[in-house]
Length: 71
Image (cartoon, rainbow, N blue to C red; front, side):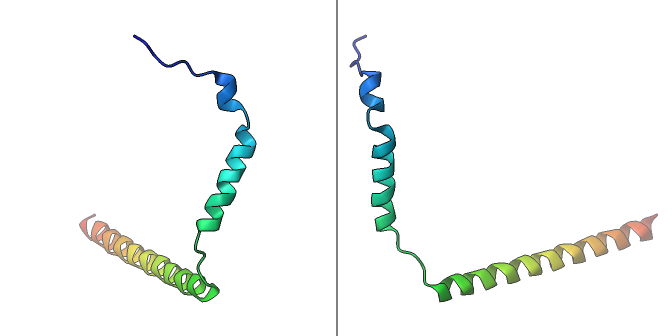
């Protein structure tokens, strides 16, 4: 089977610098959210986590009540 030979030294030549140039060019394409958007989304996440914790706590209390009633 014929395969195209690739020299490993050619692959690694300029590896770090090529990587960081790529990272820099990708960061230029990123659209960063505004401060107000970050704050708004953070509040939404915190409220969702608190509501989920309260809901799970309620389920736990109900299950514990049912187990105590059975035993």
